[in-house]
Length: 157
Image (tube, rainbow, N blue to C red; front, top):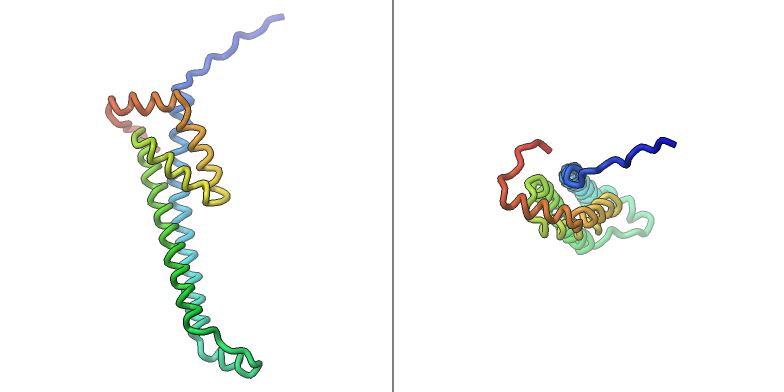
């Protein structure tokens, strides 16, 4: 039988294509972080409106329900501040990581961002795992080392 010879695969080309996609996905997750931050802001505004509406609590008094204490919403403000800050840090980290992956520099920073992304279920988890799989590959490590000696890429993401 006639068997075709196996196709030769250029690992450098495969790595470059996968790094390009990985950089794009980091930028997409940064955009999703912005959307999440806007959602959290909308949630805060709704909760603030509900908690500070005196008419709602006068109706509650007729059913022997008391309004929540002022400290309750003050605690939630700290909650919003903490998680909003975490979303901003994650978004900025992914933005920088996407840029660094495009330029093939600061591989360790991208690995740290990938580790933090694992906590952002489900998209961040998948992206963090793929970041580790790709950036810990020996051929990619060599790409980063040779890129440091060469000039940065001008190709678009």
